[in-house]
Amino acid sequence: MNAIQRLGIGLAALGRPAYINVGRAAALPNSRSVPQMCDATWNVLDAAYAAGIRWVDAARSYGRAEEFLGGWLSARAPDGVTVSSKWGYTYVGEWKMDAPVHEVKEHSLERYQAQYKETRAFLNGHLSVYQVHSLTEDSPLFEDTRLQGALAEAAAEGVRVGFSTSGPGQRDTIRRAVALEVSGQRLFSTVQSTWNVLEPSAEDALRDAHDAGLHVLLKEVLANGRLATRPPETVRSVASQKGVGPDAVALAAALARPWAGTVLIGAVSPAQLQANLSAAQVALDEEDLALMDDLSVPPDVYWAERSELPWV
Image (cartoon, rainbow, N blue to C red; front, side, top):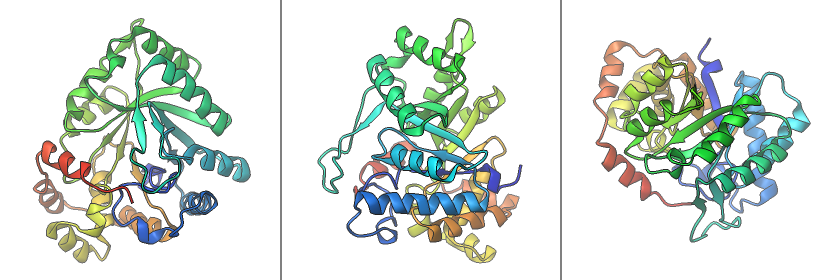
């Protein structure tokens, strides 16, 4: 599989007017109306598909991302696209830039049943993978056998069931989730986790998940845009040597992980996407990767800094 085929498009920054990605605002219309954000989403999806990308990831909490994606799928009827989405958060921002709260988390059977119905309606038969959104070790899912059973039913009907992770405890959450079984069968077949050169703490657990047969997706590979707009000097230097932008180097570091099945890109414009796609042509040698390995920060520090990013 070539590098482009291992890339996917994530719609977290396109389905709602405000999000925490640095460098996003200048690439989007100032008013961020629903029609404008729908157009922006379709423009990125068109460019991604033309480039050879065949995985698109959304979530119930990404504003109208599923609605935009469903419309694009119906209008374009693309071949071979894998669509993944997530449940567990609800978007409550009411399409306001300055909403006091943008999303609310709830891992309950009732929330799953309601959101699964909504997702299927928006995506109209295109849903391939449905993931628990931001699973953590303290999630009630681990003790809720009724919820586990409902997820297992979806898996039996042909939808791959997965989970995503966030926060400093990703590694332990991944290991616990991979081991979860229902009626003697492993429940989850995919895992989507934050991994980037600043926060690689989940790497060993993700490699083990891959070895156990799960499809691994990497998200926030650009650290919510920080590695593209204010990269460490090491990333900037390697990018200069390779003749690409720092975003391409950060993505290439993720693509260099053989256990990573899909590396998600969060571009909000065709121009950002084209810059990101340069990663597919970047070959990082052992010295480059060793330099990248030295950039990691303690997970608690990374996630504290992420929590301070403004929704703009």
